Length: 133
Image (cartoon, rainbow, N blue to C red):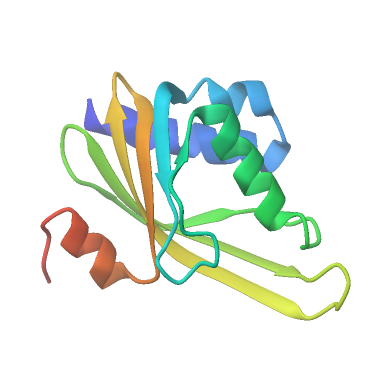
């Protein structure tokens, strides 16, 4: 089942990069929750796939188009995946380069995302799932 979760993560990211909202929503559980990283100005959890999609659209709206890429992906067993998500882009108004690199812990139920929690670094994401180096 866990490799299916990795595939679901990849499908969701591909759909997000294409702007295919329906395909992206299909990878999420109706009760999904997203928890922003502590360092983000937006700190409140976001509940529901539609609200999560809207949140991601709002926070990336100030950037030029660009693709999200997966770096390291760690299958953590039956229901969790840890992954590094990166994006190189520029601010629409300023033209200043932006390098996005955060870690997420995604939790799955029946191959659909039920929770995404963002972290500033690998160590924090590993700690969240009980891994150590």
